[in-house]
Image (tube, rainbow, N blue to C red; front, side):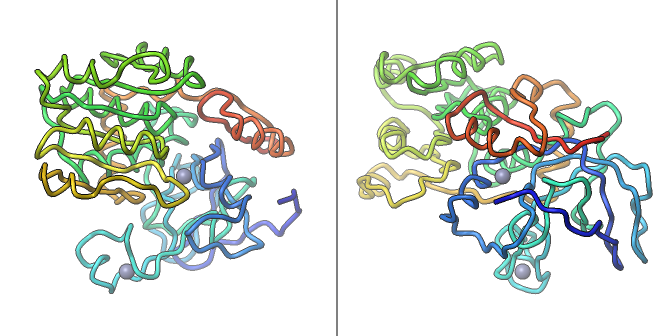
Length: 334
Ligand SMILES: [Zn+2]
Ligand SMILES: [Zn+2]
């Protein structure tokens, strides 16, 4: 990866040119850098798919957006609209999906081009910084509302208090659940933030006994829902062990490698086991409403701002788990 000067993009039919305001670094940007991601990448490509900005120009046929509009964009760029997944609304699983920042130039730049249908209006009461975190929030609303089942009174275990974990935990709280957030020594600050954000219990699994707590809180039955956001093998096994019979387990974190757990437990205990992948249109609208209602707070997750030229330093800090969300800003950004 390197900084390069490339021509300023010109919007074609159906495209919208956006001046990037805030652009967050995602774990998958590191995977692109390391060249170990299972999503199609077409280099040379500008990475960055979590951002907010202002429309500066629109191509022929664009009707829903005009220059000056504040916007956020989905990470998906191309989906076919014809495969079975697209036709049932699950374009996040389209057989020929191509993504922004992977296949098409993304947001670690001054300008980027977006297809009109992938944009959402960013309401005036949501600032650009919060707006730039709507993409990961939409992934979480997809996981919580489309891929598993949480209701008031449930006990939910969220393992992994990174940005995704702390968003998922807030969604579970918004649904009226009690929430345990678990992490390790490296997550001390993050667990503290989880408490500040209203999570009921935080557990450092290297120092405290998560299993005993889960049993005490459920008369030994186990937690109703596990949202596994760490991608760590140990957390996967613990989650499978602690979820109650007929409970829900959703794998949100990527493990980066195959992991081992006893799959028979899914039979014996009739566990609903699911994964979640990216997001769909209404997951974004839901995220926007939850922010406006004050049920989800994203600003506390924004840790550092660096200039685009400092991307190497930012990637290094992110890899070393400094803070939660790091942002890269181009010179003169709105
Ligand atoms: Zn991402
Ligand atoms: Zn499709």
